[in-house]
Image (tube, rainbow, N blue to C red; front, side):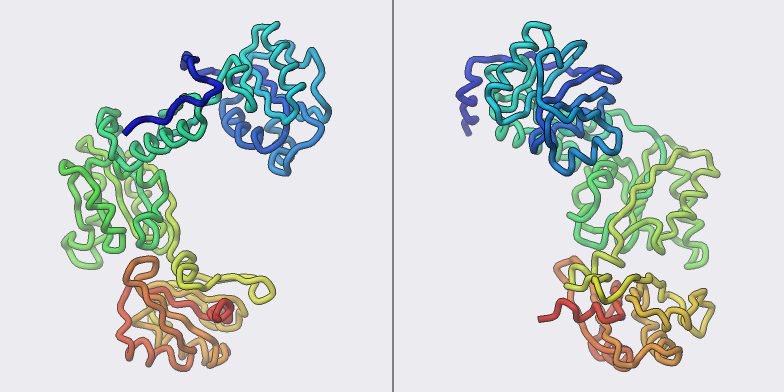
Length: 410
């Protein structure tokens, strides 16, 4: 397959790639429009002393100035603005201004990038991306081609498909990674990157299974649901597994469904590893309490309808050792989201009605949310127990109680 031809205005030009260390150094950006809005975040991240010269800006750029991330000079460019400048970026739609800035930069020997004419610039802004501690920058002369190559390289580094990843040094330790609600595409970028770095993966039953299939053959995968010693001892055994492998010099990823800290015992695992003297990284995940209802067409909040939503574990029924104040939950007018409640939903619904929640309150049960097996069953508090039994709903399922259940119904 032939590569795209160089952009006509840059054909024959060969840039010399270099990384600029701009921390504390003056950088001038001329123009406050969409181009500046895209370029400024990377300059801010570099620690540069950024001066923006423009009579107006986009709201996003204005917010950067309000936050003190840049210094905004609310006026047009004048000759002399590049004094003591290390790097300049011209991003206006006025060719005359762009040419004047370029001329001053050339006179002062300041490297200058131009958004309108790369051939008239002395510096090109690469299509760049980051993966861990590495910055990938691509220069082709054609911004679209550069962006395409950048995306392919960064995606390959993040998902582990680029062989070069195996040469990066791994530091022993533990990462508690939230895998999201089930769809493998809903894990965070950082979570996928750390998973690709793992020597050992200790996976929950609800962690996205497809992600495990992508792991290289050398990675040891431990199914946490099969760790012995029974339910009471299972968490202690999981903690010991994480600690033992990390102390053996391995990088261990604890892959969990949803978010590690939403009924996932992530706090217990963190404490165990810290007490063992191990470095721990926590990667939040998309919680099923919000994402699964969304995937089923249910917003957990809706303007004019509810000002709060409450996430409750239904693992323990209301007449058992539950720590939930069911009376308070019933009196709230907002949305209730129940996790791990399939087996107890009949008792929970009866308790909510007993405590004052109307029996005709809408209820939706979403099984296997965000996956190809997702299905939604609707009921009311009065009927949900019988409906779940009749429909043979099995975990995992998220149960949503409140008027938001029907807000987007057609």
